[in-house]
Length: 410
Image 1 (cartoon, rainbow, N blue to C red):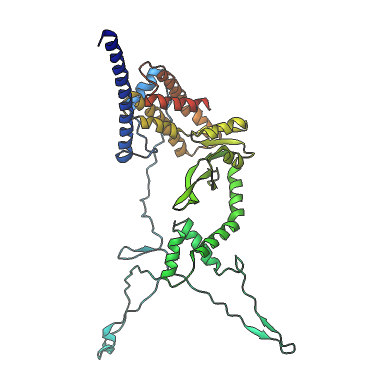
Image 2: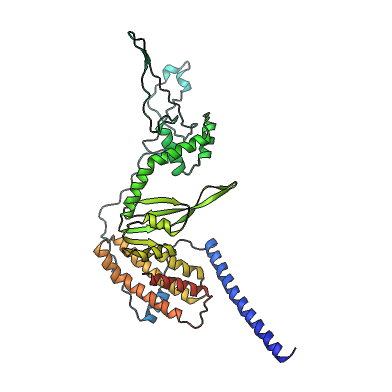
């Protein structure tokens, strides 16, 4: 092997070594992220800010972040605190239940009152012992007995009409319809489980009948759902997201993958809409004519829709930006600085919520305390993007790119 071949071979090995090191760094980052997901802190609400990192970060940027004024000390209470009263009944056995829980009284006879010396005893009081019990299913069959009348002069027969029902000619009473809907939608009890419970109670009802009842109930509730969607979309601030949902049969043994699009309005209302796709057409249909602040994640479709509609101000969640830096790991000190800066922003927002500020007061507080933190964070991101030791394949580079893209969308 001559000198040229050796040099070429050396370059190939160095390139391969560099590529393997890059792949190893990525795998180590992924392993570190997986460990945090399995064994670490998962909540994004509990943000711990290191004061030393926070001070060094803003000092290096030449930024002074104003701190909110401390809360005034609470005046000493002159009256002793009263114990919280518990509603309902509390037994000696520790059983708590409200007044709406039915109580079945069982009289326990005393043997002394039936013997020869029964006259020697006198009942002066009673003692109660409570036990929680369960009865078989609470289903009941309603029998409407209607009188059949015969008109004497004409000889015609006449029967009293059947009481009206929510779904005409249905074998289910409105209480049964409401019960299966609540069990399915509130307590997540599927229809096939409810079918098994009905069979165990001696009621033979096909599963297709239950499915048909739920379908007809959905048709009856559609105007209410549409009215709630219109109420949510009339909010000045609207939060929107999408999540996968399997619904419908795609092929034997496999269900079709659809999407739920939850929308959250300022009146504390949530509207869930379903679509078979995750495309932009769904957003166009749901947000037709909407003008206001749209809060979403980093999905590109929202950003594209906001650019086409000047009346929409696109806002994105800081939790997604923080999550990108959290996925990088703790190998690079810059990650701790980024989390510390975002943590300070979370603290400022927590202070605003604690003071229950709203309207102009809330806007002014954000301008005074939150805006300097945000400006300092973008300045820090600019500095990190110009680092010479930061390769494009580095996970930190991807997190910075994601953050800067969110800034550009503002």
